[in-house]
Image (tube, rainbow, N blue to C red):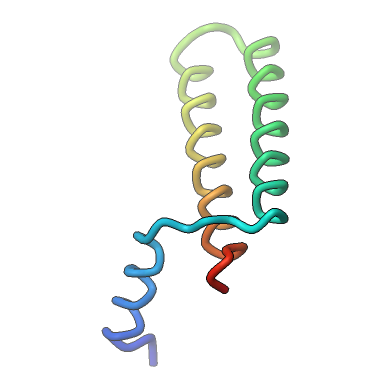
Length: 79
């Protein structure tokens, strides 16, 4: 059996709350950003300009957003 409605709501409430990351979380977020910037540079250099490169960069930005959300939600001062 899956999670209860109350558990689902609790998870959503947690996810939609601001999270102040710990010092470790801040370091992880900075590392994520630095790695993403490096990879974006590689994409820009190696991929011809066009829709596919644009989408790759957009999805890379989305991936960074979710990676940092994972860190912020799990490395917070309230845990």
